Length: 336
Image (cartoon, rainbow, N blue to C red; front, top):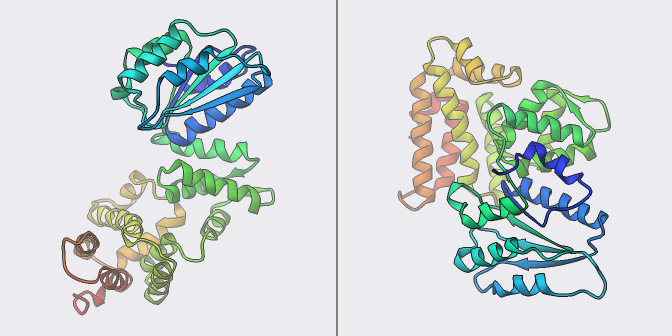
């Protein structure tokens, strides 16, 4: 059975390394786990490391040759096998299985796979698991997501309120790398003390002169002029419209669900809307009916088709109209 990620720190602290490791799953987590294993290997005297990058023309005999090779400079060696797609193929499965059947003394094989699911498992991975250590790092889900952000902040010497953590989690939308980068930036920008939601919003928003979160907030606040300036700035900075639309559509769908709810307060709680955004959303909902949010989503769908070449028109022009209509619903009929 694969080892759970929670046991990984304990395994890493052992006085000896296993003959073979497979660290797989979410790229950021798997890469960081591999980095920590490399550091531990150096501490334990694995003074030589050989990197084997698996690609279309990779020769799997190189693994056997590297394992059998002698070093004049190091008694212990780390073989760093990088398997980006997570599937070694027939020849690769044979090569890894052969290594596991008779691991050379003083050699540790580290396999990293940045894609992993049940489909990637096979006899080779079961043999590896039986011989050494297999850890699958799945991205945090549900409540785990905010807990992961909190732990990551703590690891960087930061603390934050529940609402501040929720705000960062909302902005990162489950993107581990984006959240990690923001936390690294916060560690530089924030000089001690507990971060509240206002500070978090200010510091996260400072990552770029223009961002899609400011755009959405301005539109929902009814500040059409500012929202259009931000949209123009994003376009000037070379942002892809399709990428910008993702968060905007997400918030339009949220507005539609709230507008459709029989009990708005209960729906706000069910959607985990925190106080920092609740006021903004309530203002937007007071300005428009449920039909308005449906119309906005139809407009967003038309923009998506334009970007993909499935409908005629200028998608940026349509995006301007959508932003204006979100901010001021009375413009909907004029901006068809």
